[in-house]
Image 1 (tube, rainbow, N blue to C red):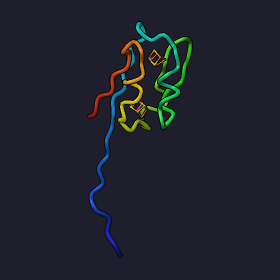
Image 2 (cartoon, helix red, strand yellow):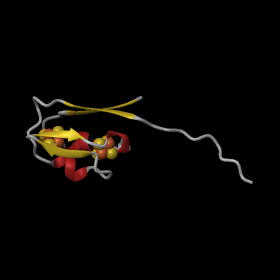
Image 3 (cartoon, protein in one colour):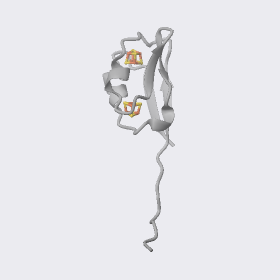
Length: 71
Ligand code: SF4
Ligand code: SF4
């Protein structure tokens, strides 16, 4: 039986500056794994474990409110 090799997991810490967020929804639209939702006028990372670290949300945010940190 084939034994699996090492499996690497990448985990990201997602931060959003709620003072900066303008609830434009760009991060919600661009995220390929539906990490983001808009709630009460700010972006909320509702599924942070699904983050792929693609940095798409960081790139589209017009006010640089999002930080993604690999741990
Ligand atoms: S880095 Fe990519 S996968 Fe992670 S929350 Fe942003 S858009 Fe989604
Ligand atoms: S892209 Fe930036 S400003 Fe727009 S909803 Fe997301 S965090 Fe807020």
